[in-house]
Amino acid sequence: MSVLTDGQKRFFEDFGYLVLKQFLADEIGWITEEFEAVFRDRKTMHVGTQRSCIVPFIDQREKLCTLLDHPGIHQVLCDLLGDDFNYLAGDGNFYTGDTGWHPDGEHERGLYLKAAFYLDPLTRDTGALRVIPGTHRKQAFEGTRVRKAGGCKQHWGIEQKDVPCVALESTPGDLVFFNHNLMHSSVGGSARRRMFTMNCGRRARTPEEIADLEAYVAGHSRFWIDSSFSDLMKRTASPQRMKHLEQVLAHESALPELSAKARREALEPARG
Ligand SMILES: O=C(O)CCC(=O)C(=O)O
Image: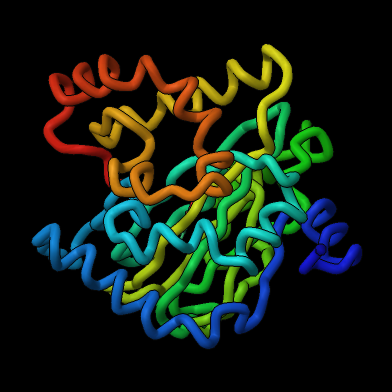
């Protein structure tokens, strides 16, 4: 049974994002402890001058993997993407400072979204996610500069903080979903702003959608990973979870070679 109302589904479709206030209020304690444990286990020294990023993220701890099985989160993802949605990995971050305006994707087909878990209270000017509603609809903005808002200074002579937008001020326990094509940014965050994500997409059906999925998965080579998911994520998967991993697993055979190339060519894995 749907968790989202028809109005919420239409809001996501039309504006490209959806905030579920205090959706994880009862669980945010353990989620935050597990988040810290991943960085502790990895012995990541976050120095606060640049973003620290781990991919895949929830995969690193058995309990975090279960967020993909969480009845509420699972149902919202089914509501937005269909019951056979793909899980597409995600990152865990200590962000530092501002994030410039950008979309995460330029998808012409399918539907790709990000579920974002912000673990600190954030206001408009202290690092809350900012979005330009509707910009996931690429065609509607063709012939404008709005989907290139990163160039706000040249285009409009304004700072990134002054680009018209909605700031999704959040409290730990809120859950933010946004379409990968949506323009987003943040301003004024601390040097240790904690956030992790789960990327998901509608199951690919046509050859073109499969090609898009393969390109998306291949992009993970920048993180120097040979599979989109950890062994732990796969080993502990129930049949329900496996349904959301299987299409990616069937289309990631190019990843080891691409990652080997990335290791030869870059000094370190990408930080986002
Ligand atoms: O919170 C932020 O600073 C930006 C997040 C972001 O760009 C992303 O997850 O794609």
